[in-house]
Image (cartoon, rainbow, N blue to C red; front, side, top):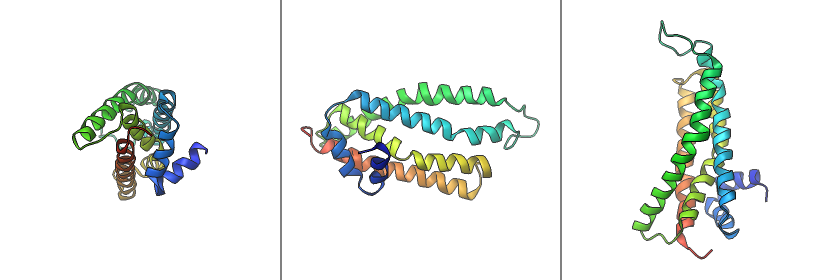
Length: 170
């Protein structure tokens, strides 16, 4: 099935989609593609917010307005170099914690659950980026969408991790 269809199905049946992904076998290239796609989409979602900052909004009085290219370069460095490494570490930590609670999955399945959950929730990240760009970071609507994004990510990740750690021979 198409990745976009699986992403939308994940919002309704995360464990079922995760089971299908695990049935494909251990494909580190697929997991890395999910992670990098999610990071690129989240990086792009930051552009409206960065544009707002580069226009001089949401800065303390007297602050120097940074250039858009500088802001984009820093976000690029963060989302495409630093965060992927952090997500690999978080995936490993989640596997260790799952093992403490009787998880039977693999390092790969724990990583895949995290990376897929991140990719599946990127539509909410795009909406949050638009809201932050148009309304600013402190608007109630922006904070509500940000909370929704994080809550959806947490619920989906816990469900996919549960499926990933359920059985190691899928």
